[in-house]
Every structure is written in structure tokens, then in C-alpha cells.
Amino acid sequence: MRLQKYILRELIPPFLTGTALYTVVFLFGYFYVSSQWLTGVPLGLVGKWIAYQVPDTLVKVFPMAVVLMVVVSFGRLATERELTAMQSGGLSLTRVSLPAVVLALFVSAGSLWLSEWVVPQANIQTRSLYWDEMQSGRGGGLSQLAGRPIDLGEGKELFFASYDEASRRMNGVRIQQWDGRTATVVLADSGTYEGSEIQLTGYQVYRVNYEGVKALADLPETASFDRYRAAVQNIFQAANIAPSPDASTTIVVGNSRAESIARFADAISADSASISGQYRRMIDPQLNPKERRDARIEFHTKLALPLGNLVLLLVSLPLAIRYGRTTGLALGISVIIVALYYLTVLLGRSLASVGLLPPEVAVWLPNLAFVLLGWRMLRA
Image (cartoon, rainbow, N blue to C red; front, side, top):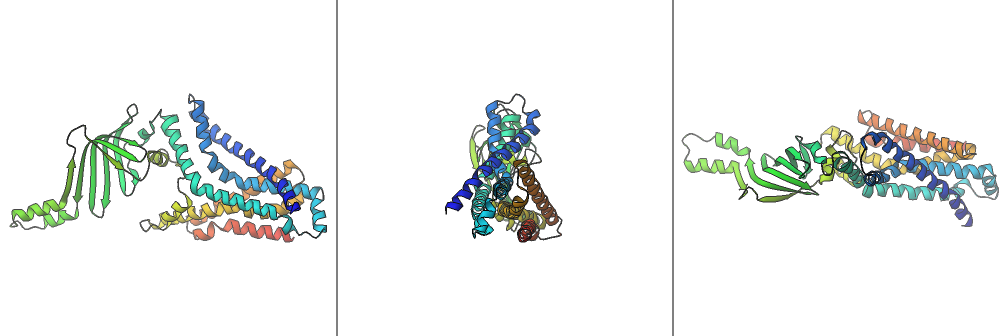
């Protein structure tokens, strides 16, 4: 037990250092790329925007930090002959490396937890803050969506003709929801979209059954007035018109204002799907084959990447024993290993996207390949 604690004390500092170092590098990269569009933005908003990107960045840098941890720690143990002394005392490499395995397991569990509970909402807030506060002025992000259909979730779709940033109001609003061939259409002069509620002013609500149009057309000319009236009522099933121009109504929608802005404000939208959310999308019977394949790719990627921390530990351990003599060399080795790993992940995703391999095989192939590589190097 004393030995395990000693090795754990060797592992934690380089892991924390690597996590901090790589996180700062990534965040600086995000800031540098966007810096030309951040002129005049309050420093507090910039700091908040950077902070929202930390959870997603941590999931990306944890594998690099794990590799650096192993290469630095076990490289030092090998260089100072401590590892040889442990093995001479009857301790196997498996037992010596057990603290690293346990720590990597905790890191993988942390990555899965972040991917499920924190990263999706943080990514939504990142994009929403950028477009709604930092770029368009306070609350102007919805102006990016004027004239475009917006998925509100739960089968609802929003359209508005224009947006006034000063009053935060949408003008010329239409919300529609379909149930088979029956549509519920809400028209309004103006409205606000805050949180998950849309408040409409000067509204008109209609429920139209388009299936009934054929029944009306098939009525003979000799049909009675009552039959014609019943057929028309079957088409226009309900109507609700505001009693006054200032009257308002509130509609609760599935996607919040922040989610709508994050998904549609630009071409590179934030990844707002959790692991469980991606699974629900994967089994959605309404998806076409391409959408279902893409959902399968994303679901398995969200599982495979966090477990890559364990896989990369297995590969980096033999390299640490052989080459991890200096911090600079260890840093270089960690970057190369993780770069090769992510390249194989991209290759696997590409093979799955074009249909050459099933997503379940292609996405997990990098993990399997690196496990076999690490096992072979350990036995060599």
C-alpha cells in the first residue's frame, strides 16, 4: 500500500500540470482565432465565454494529460532505476502500474460525466453568449435567425420575419405543429422568446385538417347544406383569435432561446447532445438512414473517446520506460501519441460516414488498434 501511494504521488503532479498546460493552450487558441471579432467586448464577457469552453476542453485534453502523466512518472522511475528495483523485489509491472490504471479509470469516468451532464449545456451557453451578447449587442442573437425556420422541439417550428434588438421582439411570427395531416398554426403580430417560453401578442390560432379537404371536394353538388357545413368544420377544426390587439398568450417550447441560437446562429453549431440524448436520437424511428448512421457515429464516439484514456495509458507505458528520460522528450511523446490516436479516430469516423464500416466497428477500431499495439510493445 505504501508503494501504491508513492507511485500515486508521482502521477498526480504531472497529470495536473498537463491538464492545466493543455487547457490553457486550447483556450488561448479559441481566443486567438476569435480575437478579431471581440474588439470592444467587455472583459468580463470574454472571461465568461472562455470559462464556458473549459468543460469541453477538459474532455479533449484529458487523454494528453494521461499520456504525459505516464511518460513523465514512469520515465523518471525507469531512469533512476527505481522501476528496476521494484521488479527485482518481485513486483510485476502490472502491480506497479495499478495506480496509473485506477487514476485513468477515474479520468475516464470524469470525462463520461462531463460529456453527459456538463459539456452539452456549456457548449450551448458558449455559442449563445457569443452571438446573443458579444456579437449582436445585448439580446440580439435572434436577429441571426430571422427569415429561417427554427426547430423548437416537440414537433413545433418557429418562423419570424424580423427582429428588433432594442425591444427584443420578433415581428411577423408563425409557429406550426403537425400531427399527421392536421396542422396547428399560430400567427402573431409580434412576440418575445425568453428561456423556453414564447409570448405572442396579437395572436391567431388555427387547427386545420388537410385530410378533410378531399372529403369536401368529393361531396356531390346535390349534398345538403348541413353536410357541406360539417365538411368545412372538419377542415377548420378550431380557431382562437386574440380578443384585442394587445392580448397575449404564452407557448412553452422544447428548445430554449439559447439552444436555438447555439444550433442555428452559424454553420459550426455547438455539440449540445449528451450521451443519453444521442442514444435517443439514434433509436428515433423518424430518422432517415443517413441521419441514423450519423447519430450512431456520434453516440459511439462519445463513449469511445473517454475510454481512450485507458487505451493511451497502455500505449504510453512501454514508451515511458524506454524514452521518457526528460520532460521535453516526454512532452513530445505525449503529443505524438495523442495526435496519432485522434487521427485514427478521424479515420474511423470517415470510414463510418461513407458506409465502408459500421459505426460500431469504425469508431471503436482506434481503441482496439492501440490496445493491441500497447500489448505488443509491453511484451516486446
